[in-house]
Amino acid sequence: MSEWETVIGLEVHTQLLTQSKLFSGAATAYGAEANTQACAVDLGFPGILPVLNEAAVEMAVKLGLSLNSEISHRSVFARKNYFYPDLPKGYQISQYELPVVGKGYLDVLLEDGTTQRVGITRAHLEEDAGKSLHDAIEGMSGIDLNRAGTPLLEIVSEPDLRSAKDAIAYLKTLHSLVVYLGICDGNMQEGSFRCDANVSVRRKGDPKLGTRAEIKNVNSFRFVEKAINYEVERQIAILEDGGKVIQETRLYDADKNETRSMRSKEEAHDYRYFPDPDLLPLHVSAEFIDHVRKNMPELPAQKKERFKSQYELNEYDATVLSSTRELADYYENTVKLSASSAKLVANWVMGELSGALNKNNLSISESKISAELLAGLMKRISDNTLSGKLAKTVFEHMWESGKDADTVIAEQGLQQVTDDSALIKIIEEIIAANPDQLQQYRSGKDKLFGFFVGQAMKVTGGKANPQQLNDLLKKYLQGG
Amino acid sequence: MALTEKDITKIAHLARLEIVEADIPVYTNNLINLLNLIAEMNAVDTNNIEPMAHPLDKPQRLRPDVISEQNLRDYFQKNAPLAEAGLYLVPKVIE
Image (cartoon, rainbow over all chains, first blue to last red; front, top):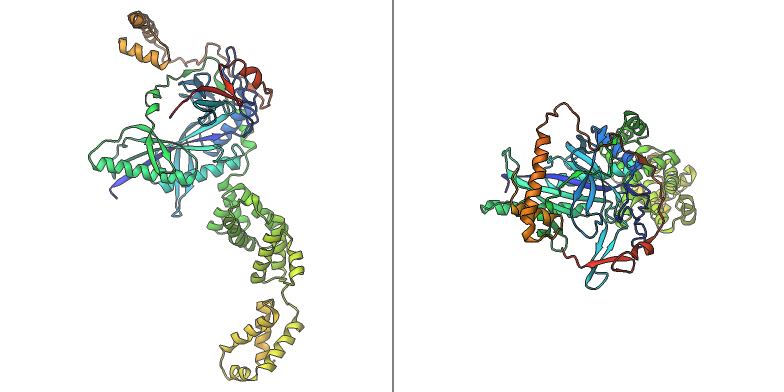
């Protein structure tokens, strides 16, 4: 199998976070009652005229700038013609020859730790179609046009990716970017971030690309990976049998883990694009681009570098903690509120907190322990009220009860014993009760030190400050 | 520019137009004439002229991102042949 090379290019449709639609003043909110957000423009009534939404243009420019792309000063909207009940006008307004965002690139951190620069071919604005519901009414298809006209930015990559894993790394990086930029909510279940994958294989070293199949609308990262892997195996099997791959659109079936040909779409591929006579060319001025540039939020790559210098985090920690805007904000808030070491907070956020979130299948925004509460816990570690081990117990109680660290410590009596005199008293008692062990220790059996530590921890219920206990024990065992 | 009757049938199908077979030669002729006219225009040297996407040589006006449309579903659905449970109904579409 190893003589084959996989070639993948991805087309991602991101739903833009505008209030109103791309060409009409109807609302775009998800989940509204069917057809209550579909106006005459969205329904394609005679005599209607589209008027372009400025916020959508701004968002496209924002993405373009963050992909290091050329922003077209002049771009053109075109009609893509096809017939489907969820497309009332009989055409989708899209961009064809002159998209608003031109060539650029995205740097992607791959699983093996290397960075790949993935070429971006283009990104263009277009309107979404409605939804067809096939099971709602017996024998009929029901059409909900709330989504019709919702602004989409289609981001097309070069065929630069060489494995399903790399494709997922690219998608996750792009996903994080559009969420950072605040131009897309990134919700894949609701279809805000959808992916089509163009997949082909060729013999290693062959400069010519193989015939590709396009896998449509896969709605989770895991399924994209599975769909690509299935498709690669399918194509290799065909070629090794001396067959030919047909250029076609295929649908991924998650239940069966296979891709299937969508024959019905074959002949519809003649879209007869032409410039939309209802829309004038879009002019994006240098001033407009400057205005957008000035209002750009910090991007993931910039944030990672800042985390490394400001918090002295290593590459790995900085990458993980800057991977999403929510996680980064949570981390920074905790550091600020706790006034604790940035590394300590990093360890807790990536360790205990992430573990608890994963275990309960929650996202950082759904965490049972807020940044403020975690900061309270960090303070008690920093001021030695808690040892690392006790802190984990406090964390568990906080997670269960929602109470703050100080309340949990007081209720459970979990504070560390750091009072010298209390510890000395305990040590003296232990030494008095174990004369044999003391004798052996003093005659050179160093290993017995652990025995005394164990005894002291037993008496204090694990609450003795370990460093302090060690120091005091050493002193008293040697006859101090 | 040559067009065959097969092309005409395909174009009509793509546009979902039903045409009578007897009319196909007429359409073929008309469209060939149109294409010849376009070919004549294409012969003009426009190398140094930036193409216009629209006869009004003006840029697109932009609209602020504001919700300005009310829910007029019931009104619009009076115009639909079939609607139920808020949905527009069409003959079953099977993928």
